[in-house]
Amino acid sequence: MLANACCDALGLPKIRKSQGNGQNNGKAIDMRICMVGTGYVGLVSGTCFAEFGIDVVCVDKDAGKIERLKNGEVPIYEPGLEDLLERQIKKNRISFTTDLAAAAKGADAVFIAVGTPTRRSDGHADLTYVYQAAEDIARAIDGYTVVVTKSTVPVGTATEVERIIREANPNADFDVASNPEFLREGAAINDFMRPDRVVIGVASERARKVMRELYRPLYINETPIVFTARQTAEIIKYAANAFLATKITFINEIANLCERADADVQDVAKAIGLDKRIGSKFLHAGPGYGGSCFPKDTIALVQTGQLMGAPQRIVEAVVAVNDARRKDMAQRIIDACGGSVKGKRIGILGVAFKPETDDIRDSATLDIVPILQAAGATVAAYDPAAMEHAKKILDNVDWKTGPYEVADKADALAIVTEWNEFRALDLDRLAVLLKDQLILDFRNIYKPAEMQEAGFRYLSIGRPEIAPPARLKAVAGGSQS
Ligand SMILES: NC(=O)c1ccc[n+]([C@@H]2O[C@H](COP(=O)([O-])OP(=O)(O)OC[C@H]3O[C@@H](n4cnc5c(N)ncnc54)[C@H](O)[C@@H]3O)[C@@H](O)[C@H]2O)c1
Image (cartoon, rainbow, N blue to C red; front, top):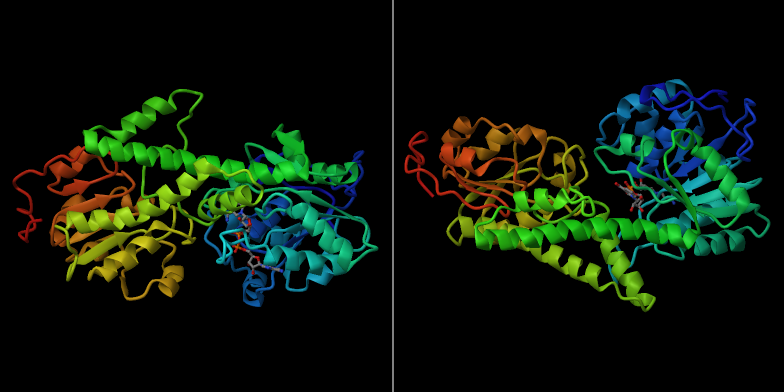
C-alpha cells in the first residue's frame, strides 16, 4: 500500500491516504476502492482515483478486456489515458481482474460503472448490469463499504440497489451512494481531474465522509462538491444531459430556419451565446446529437417522466426532432446529388460520434450510411480511430486509409465528424480526386467563401450557400454536379 498520492502530472494537491472514515489527521493511512465495469467511465475514473493516491482494483466480466489491460494495452482511445495508466500500473496503484469477490473484499468503496443501455422494449434504462453487479457486490463486501452508483441510472436506483444488497446479504454493513459521472469522451481525464462540479448523493453521514475523503484532492482544489440526496443526484445527471441535448437540438432547428432565410446560424449562435444567461457551449449546429449518453439518457428521462406521472414534454420533442434530423442528413446528401444516389459513390469522413474518441455508439454516420446504401449508393469511409468498431456494424462500406482515398472518384464527400485531420484538407487535391465537386459539411468546419473560391459546391449547416464559380471542375477536368 502506498502512503502518498501523486497528482503532480495534473497539478493537483498531494494527499495522504485515509482510512475512509474522513479523518485524515495527517496520518499515513490506506484507502482502497473497487471499480466494477472497466469501460470508458470505469477505466478513466479508476485511473484518475489511482492518480489521487488511492489503491484501485478494476473489475470487468469481459475477460479479454482484462487480459489486454493486464498486458498494458488500453482497450479504448482516450487521449492521455495510456500514459496515466502506465504510470499508475508502475506504481502498483491500479490492477485488473475478473474476480469481483476478491476485488471488493476489504474495499472502502465499490463503484458500479457498468453500462446502462436503452432497454429495447420500452426505452427505459436497462439496469440488468447494475443489478447483477449489486448482487455480486453484496456477496463480496466485508466491513463497512460504500457502494457507489457511478453509472447513469434513473431516479430510485440507489434505493433498489440497497434493497438488492440487503436481500442478498442481510448482515452486510454498507451504504449506497450516488455519484454520477459527467466526463466527456475525448477530454475524459481533464474532466475527471478538473470537473465543473462533483455530485454526490448520500443517505448517511458515514457514506458522506468516505465520499468526501475519496474526492479530497478535488475538494482541496476548491472544486464545487454538491452533496445532496441520492434521488436528487440521480435526477441531476439526467437533467444535465437532457438540457445539453436540448440546447443542441434548439440550435439545429434555428439552423433550419437560417437555411430558409439565407441567414447564418453561426452568427446567431455566437450572438446569443455572448449572453451570459445562455452561454456559448453546445450551440454548434450539426447532424444531431449522438454518442453513448445523450440519446439513451434523453429517452430514459422521457420514460421515467411518463412512469412517474411527470411527463418531460420538452425532452420528448428533443428526442423526436433529433431522430428526424439523422434521416434528414442522409436526405440532404441525396438531394444534393440531384434527388438520387443510385449508382453513385459517396465518401464519408468520420464515423466516431465526435472527435478524439473511437466510440461510435449512436453516431450520425451509423444512421446516414444505411440510408444511402438503401438508396443505391456505394459508400467509402474513413475515421482516424473508430473504423475497427464501425466495421463490425456497417456492412459493405469501402473502408479507406485516409480522407483523400475516400474522396477518390466520389460523387460527393460528406464531413460527419470534425476530426482535426479533416479541418485542413488540401482543397486542390480534393478537387482533382472528387468526381463531382460536391462537399457537404455537417460540422461547419470550412468557410463557405473559401470553398466557393476552391471551386466546390459546398453545403453546410444553417449557412447561406454561395454559388460556385463557373470554373468549377476546370482543374479536375471531370464531370460537374
Ligand atoms: N461514456 C461516457 O462518456 C459516459 C459519461 C458519463 C456517464 N456514463 C455512464 O457510465 C456508465 C458506463 O458507461 P461506459 O461508457 O463506461 O460503458 P461501457 O459499455 O464502455 O463499459 C461498461 C463495462 O462494464 C462491464 N460490465 C457490465 N456488467 C458487469 C459486471 N456485472 N461486472 C463487471 N463488469 C461488468 C462491461 O463488460 C463493460 O466493459 C453508463 O451508465 C453511462 O451512461 C458514460
